[in-house]
Image (cartoon, rainbow, N blue to C red; front, side, top):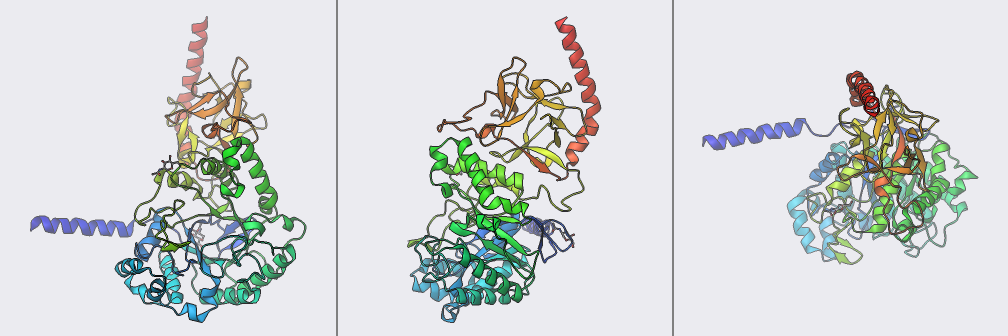
Length: 565
Ligand SMILES: *[C@@H]1O[C@H](CO)[C@@H](O)[C@H](O)[C@H]1NC(C)=O
Ligand SMILES: *[C@H]1O[C@@H](CO)[C@H](O)[C@@H](O)[C@@H]1NC(C)=O
């Protein structure tokens, strides 16, 4: 008896603890708007969109996973995993065809023969099972909003089903299922329906324009019309516009900017996968492919940042089993780029498995955050790696900390730091990393100190020195990817910054700089990125340790000199 009471007590305490200490930190103060390339809240503070895609546009027309987990559990998990937002897809016909919208969830599953899903739904989300598809979609939005997750409503396709191909009839204005007038009607309906839900902060007007009909004139004509329609129905939401050719190409905007009656609401979305470039990553040299693909990205979309528009990478992702070489090489290059430009993004996908996809019942999603059961995370190390991109590095009012550089390591998502002066530099969380400056002479100095990064010996830890004028203190970004940081040893040999198996920062021979397609440069990829994230730890460390360390180093130098005498 006593024991039972005690256990009950502990459970209650645990519950209270769980309730009062959740990750639900985000009170973003909508509406959001665009201040040049940054998305900001109504106090002018940057809000970085760190979203995950949640699919609700397949044949069943119900947000995936609800036969596996209660909707509120999923909403809570999303925040706990560090995302602040969901890009929730919808098929146009859900909001334009009343006979589809009024079908109940149960009927929709039955029609497709998905009886097992009904049983799971009954157990996990009984209150949604007999709602209409329209109301079920609203229930998911409401749950996300209640958990303070921001929501972007993405018109993914017209006719419910897996997306996308050139000839699926959903690709461009005028295709079989893509009537522009009906589309405007649907956009207006969605904008109006969710007008009073402040957490709905944006609408993606149409996913991945594509196919033989695509052309620039119709892009301006209809995208402008769609944007005006949404803005008229709900002036608070961000208007998110897709480019041509599967959302990869905005190059036409260089010649002719978009023309709208309002400002400060437009965001451009791009998609970037490993397979966007076929098997190039696998068959080519990773440095050369990375350089080339990044160049294309900047020419086709990245230039919009300089034109004063935010870029939302609304889809990126990879096979989370870690066995796809093409994907593994791509993601490291992507990580470097995404950290450097500090763009807003949405990971593809949250989905662990689908009710029904492309004719397969219960299809496993190897790109999904959840495992098949929607219970555990499929690959926590991957999630850990991308988590560095969840907080902003820069932007209006991000923090009061002075701008500095971080030495970022894309393949781990970590940054260069020193645990203490007596330990070699290593990789660790970017939130605890050293703040550096990078001089025009290409010297990397820890801010607030005289210490610079130096190459010491081949295969040995990189060191911090005080004499920063010799070649071993000069770090140049080399190779086509510009992600190898290279320096020269005293003997004149070139080395590259690298990490050993203990995450210690060392210098080794530069590897796979070009041509070789069998070799993985990932451990040698570093990127010097701008940040104004708080650096309390670094500042603390420098004030506490600098005196000791300067004295130590002077003594060490003296001792070395004495020794060589
Ligand atoms: C997670 O991904 C990494 C590569 O990023 C891979 O090495 C690892 O095996 C994956 N883990 C699981 C459980 O699939
Ligand atoms: C922007 O809004 C202010 C209040 O208006 C909040 O205090 C900030 O926390 C919020 N910033 C972010 C990043 O959400």
